[in-house]
Length: 398
Image 1 (cartoon, rainbow, N blue to C red):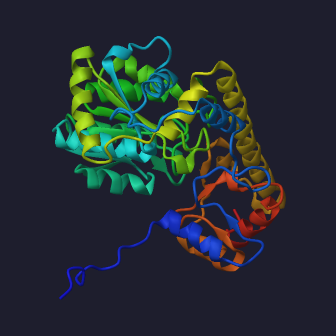
Image 2 (image 1 turned 45 degrees about the vertical axis):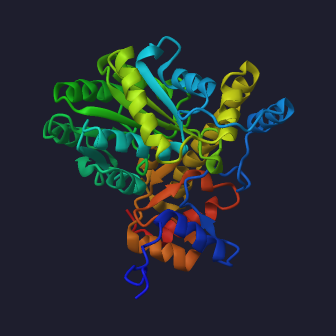
């Protein structure tokens, strides 16, 4: 018998497989609202101009291709820490590492927590991004959930969330999304975050932030407020951040891992352990993507251009969200879709159930996740009316 005869084919990724099915669909009226990538007003992928300019600068410098440090490029790390924690943070007690996207940051941090016996269990919001489960399970952590979304009222169930935290064992980790929650698009208010911060501290639970969409809610500084507030109360915490969305560097796989510690000595110890994990995994991160981000963040002109371009992206998503809600109301959907206007970021929980999602895919060529998550950035002036009509065709009148 061959060595691999006993293996069965693993299930595909629900998001990436959806995109493959979309590409193979020959209907002209099809819409892909499944994958988490920004599309412009013409439905095309966007490459930021600041990224193009940074690439030209890097090319002109004729830089070498030597191995970078295990933790990545230091100018990138320093700029990334400042972007998340602000200019006044004490960088001596923060270990930073360039990672393979936000996913890489989550995985390395998960392995660190599990293998160094910091935490044995991580609590994920219900619902959460599907890949969170695989990432942390394969990192060696036990998985549990906390209450988050009230599907009846289409909002965060804050009391149920707090009740969940009350029941968490000491030294568990809790994964938090500080803005633009994936998949619901529904976030806590800042006063709720403040109350949750104190409760997590009281229960001695370890805060772990997944910051995948900094700049997509209110702006780069505003979207970091929750993390900076937590950092004042929790000397030890983790932040995994990504440049996939806010710089459009999806395929370049560039993210950042920040681990806050009590003091400089602990930061060095943490860093040495994390670097061992990285070395035995992928050795070190690639140069090119780190150089792109570092060039933008450390150039005043390119950074300002990035902020403006990101604002345009954010405002287009917000405008499409408004037009979606008003269009649904105008075409007879009543007020049952008002909650969409209160959601933030790229994603929304549409209220579509799995059966309706399958109908939309087969009958209308509209691709979304079975849980009803849609990517608002996939909508534009050319397909919005078609999408609204399709939604109303499968939804019961309110």
